[in-house]
Amino acid sequence: MALTPDDVVTKQFQHVRFKEGFDPDEVDDFLDEIVVEWRKALAENEELKAKLAAYESGEQPAAEQPAAEAPAETVVSEVPAPAPATSADPASTSAGIIELAQRLHDEHVAEGKAQRDQLISEAQSRAAAIVAEAEAKGRDEIARLEKERVALEGRISELNAFERDYRAQLRSYIEGKLRDLDTTATPSGSTPVSAIGL
Image (tube, rainbow, N blue to C red; front, side, top):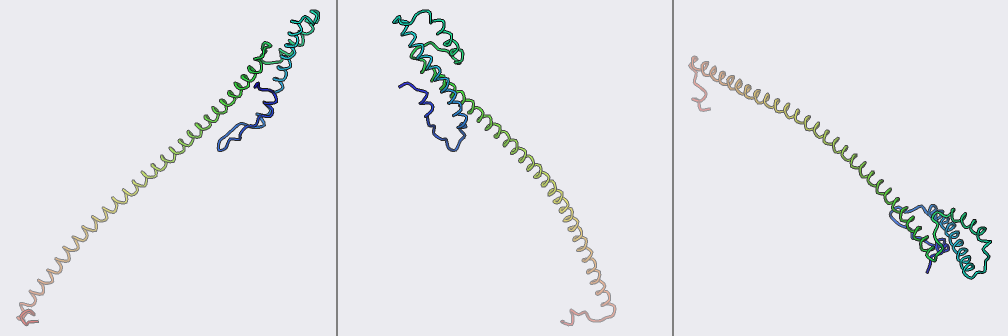
């Protein structure tokens, strides 16, 4: 069954969910333009068929031919792609409509892919900047902690040296006091505490 202008006008499209589609108003306006041009082409086709039938039957005088051709040429010049008056005109017109719709679809898909690629590129750039910033902060923190570690190790070394010196001084002091006790106890002749049994 041949496609008619009324078929184009009454065509219902499914709504697409979860992804972008065409602007319905834009599609409707475009289809209205197609219907107008299509009706012109069909009217011209019918007129030419009637003229051809009249000429073949010899009913129309030849004097009317120039007057009849002038409007036909004007109408043909208004149609974007003039076609011969055959029964294949509706099919070629619908093929042109399909081709145009496919081209529009391809353009919208290409635009969507370009936007997708741009968003991905921006997200990757932002992610790279965040990673670089985190790595820089990590390096700074590691350097700070390394400085603290070196400072603490130096402090520990100082405390260990202080402890060794303190222990040596304390040992020397205690040993000196013990010697003093031994020397002071012996000359007086007193008995050492250990001999008493205490």
